[in-house]
Image 1 (cartoon, rainbow, N blue to C red):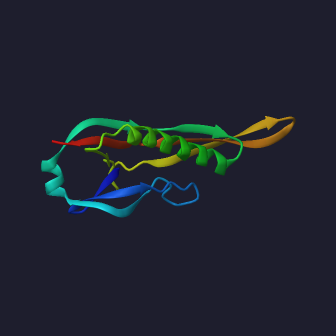
Image 2: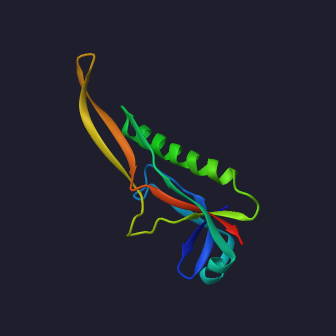
Length: 135
């Protein structure tokens, strides 16, 4: 289960990455789990921290960004699938402080005599997450 702190509570969330959205890297509350932040901090301990990033490139901007987000989500799913029953994966990145964004660059390349755009995308800063276990 993936969780995130919202004010005075820690709540379960689902990955909601969308290359067409203004905030491409997003998590949507699903309300399946909720615990007061103070209680969470006394019940759970940090086991491992992760710094997740991704980079892709390609000829189509939308496809390049989608591949970037798919790769980032795959990293999250791999960690999530390895969680034990008494563990959760917490989104540690904070809005307005160090929250990840997709960053892109483009350059002109010549393909078969035609000038075309080529896109590069990366996640910066990295998405910080941590695995917590009930103590």
